[in-house]
Image (tube, rainbow, N blue to C red):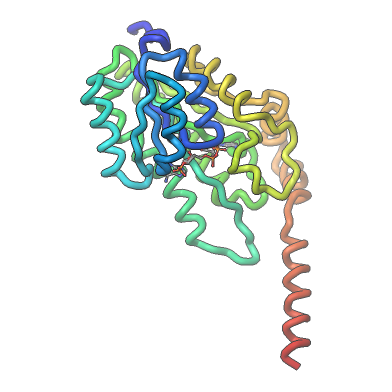
Amino acid sequence: MTQAPPLSQQVIWLTGASSGIGEALADELAPRCKALFISARSEDKLRPLADRHSNVTVITADITDEESLRGAASAIEKKYGKLDTLIANAGTCEYVDVTDFDTALFRRVFETNMMGLVNTTAAALPLLQKSKRGYLVGVGSSVSMLAMPRAQAYGASKAAVAHFLESMKADLKAMDIDVSLVSPGFVKTPLTDVNDFPMPMRISAEQAAEEIVKGVEKRQWHIHFPKGFTRILWFIGQLPAFLRHRVTAQMSRTDEALQQQGKRQIKQQESDS
Ligand SMILES: NC(=O)c1ccc[n+]([C@@H]2O[C@H](COP(=O)([O-])OP(=O)(O)OC[C@H]3O[C@@H](n4cnc5c(N)ncnc54)[C@H](OP(=O)(O)O)[C@@H]3O)[C@@H](O)[C@H]2O)c1
């Protein structure tokens, strides 16, 4: 098997670089690699990042739009003729309320997290094959280690991401392409700033970026952090089902939602009468 080139010789494409983990990762990677292509939908947020580094190129692309991803890949091909590493980081999160079940929410989350990864992989794969030893990195989530309440869409989409990447790993071996799964715990970003529940051991986006770069340098299969958090989650995920379910049911908010609905119904009845 061919030796993986050092980061300093690599052409890298990072998606979701306009905020949070992706933005911090771009700042961490740029000084270490040969060329970094950063993408997201918000070009205005990507520009300042590119201005900070001489080897960073902005390519605007929506991961739910195959055409725009093909455009991004062809911009990379024109300049370098190959891609060494794809870091598919772009993603979204929405939580489910089972008392107000919304199928459109599932479609949105899966379209971005799962199909977005599939679309990005499809655009990048021909270019990764042109590298001496290509590398596909996908950002999942530690939530896929334990089926948490309200994560029916987000958690399931990230479990699909983990399964997809492990399956790709088996098939890409013969093409000399490595694959890694990144499973962050809670990271302080705009994605989690809106959460109204406790987020134990939440780390900064800069700390997350450092952990990812360490794992990427070693082409480690499973890059998960912070370890204190992901190990506890993994452990609970391995408990016998009846114990696991006791833990996760304790975290559920359905009772609260039903109570609020009950109050709403009583109020409605009062105002109708
Ligand atoms: N923060 C956490 O605690 C945490 C934990 C586990 C996993 N993760 C995962 O880490 C990744 C980054 O999350 P983050 O916390 O850094 O979130 P964030 O700050 O909201 O960043 C999300 C990034 O994805 C991009 N994006 C979203 N939809 C896109 C689309 N359709 N096309 C192209 N780009 C799109 C956004 O850019 P535009 O809006 O400009 O397109 C943005 O750059 C996600 O996959 C997330 O699921 C985060």
